[in-house]
Image 1 (cartoon, rainbow, N blue to C red):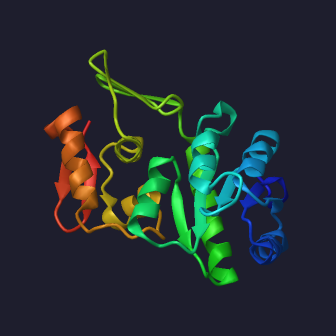
Image 2 (image 1 turned 45 degrees about the vertical axis):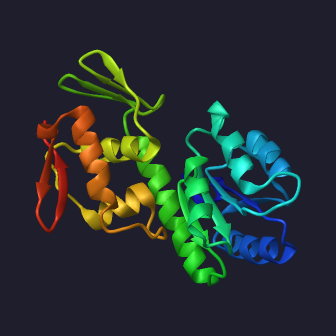
Image 3 (image 1 turned 135 degrees about the vertical axis):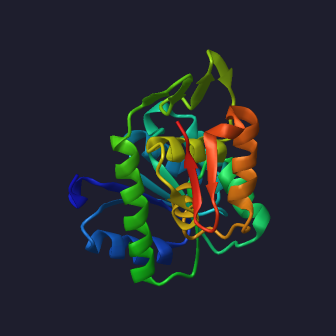
Length: 227
């Protein structure tokens, strides 16, 4: 996919942000669509079906959290990457964003070159997800990435978003050791500050639900899924 075919929806109520960020992304060759509030952003997301949506949190009409929740409820936008661009760095704001279905979180102010680099990284993730099979079968485990469903021995298992994404990543290449840095980048995003034991906690929960023998710890390196 060429840059000119990639749509980025930028939603922010600050004209300066729309102008500066929009200019830098357009200058990179992306097609940039803008909206001044969450309500308008949801409408344009439905119409344009962008590959990447950048949302501010505090906006009139509808805030970014609610806008993200609505976007995530639209089937045609299930593959869109959603990231927040906001000056709010409080933990509760980040948690609310991820619970609403966001993929990443960028705190402003941010230098234009850094932002463009971050956008490129997010879009690479989008392309990687696009080429993955929608349904993956490994032994008695079936992972439906399209519907966010897990079947183990014919029984459906409900996993929170991050546990699902972590399992999906590890099972994408059974036997491969995924380094902790790679896991954090692909599951949580490299701009997100999480505790050092975040991965360990999620692996422990997956072991409880999927099976302890399915996951192997490579000390000092990372984790792998054992077929």
